[in-house]
Length: 458
Figure 1 (cartoon, rainbow, N blue to C red):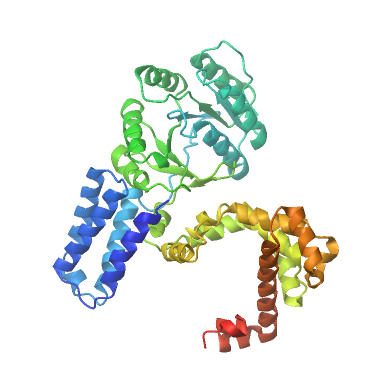
Figure 2 (cartoon, helix red, strand yellow; figure 1 turned 90 degrees about the vertical axis):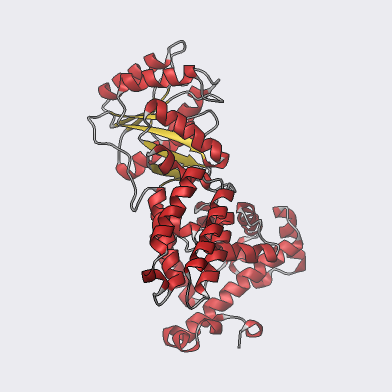
């Protein structure tokens, strides 16, 4: 979601790096551009002022200006201040240091993704923390809200408080905690009602629930796409309730990113989690240093590796590696790889975790491929599914008439089928070259040796 901000900051710092020496004027001019970029990204004005002041104090001095790489030094200072603004190095985990069942209170406006986030958090606690979790909907305002949470509980494989019509939110909260104690649950997640806007009735209700349940964590769920409105919402809830943590949803959207940079400074509460996508496993711990790296175009390779490690089946990956080494990789294997890639999330979110993501995105836009998404992966999977077992094992047998049948069966064009076959052919050619060259040959000739003859850069 930081593409625009990343692009502007990368431009500023690229210009600084190209200069052998920096004057104080150079640094101040760069900071003016940084200030404008932050304001354009919808970062709150007080946060921008504080940010620029901190960077200026550290960057304008002989130690930086006279250093061997002053441009890089300024980038490091900006990175350090960004991490501070986002909450400091390291994650702030969910507070589970209380007697079981531990109450976790979810608050926020209607439409922020609060109920879905409750389901995601329950699944995370079950899978990663091995906790027995009970979900309880206290939302008597929105039609079918309790049924929605009940459905999410079934999908996550956690407990759900039985629905008793006519009870008040306070009565439901009391029953949830009693059920949690009686049935030996570790955590009880209380999903409160939201409103379209902040009002006295909403605040009075959540205050009463907070006082009655004494939650270990009060998590405010806000939609990062709403920009400055999200910051205003967070301030209002924090002033009234004293929230202990924030969950930013829709972090995979195309918002300007200002909400994430403003939250900690405005509320004092740490961002504990970020959500991206509707899938129940799309909830991640918030790592300030990784987000700072993404904003500055340095990517989040560690996060990408962690996500891949969660998704990829180690045994299957080993089998695939052996098939690659033998040169027996076929379209069934290719389809399996597409399925794994699809599980990792949107292609845009994966690109966003790579170093130089802004430049990669710019290159995609220049080539007319900026709209890469899961539909492309699903289309490729549909094409392979429309092939016979023999065709998947031996793609060379797929000629004109077979291509027409496959295209019709998968709802695509013959050109789409040709593109997939070409992509597969390029991949297998590269694998054969890797196998033929071996490790020593690859080190001697470089990666250019893997490219097709007509595409080598020498």
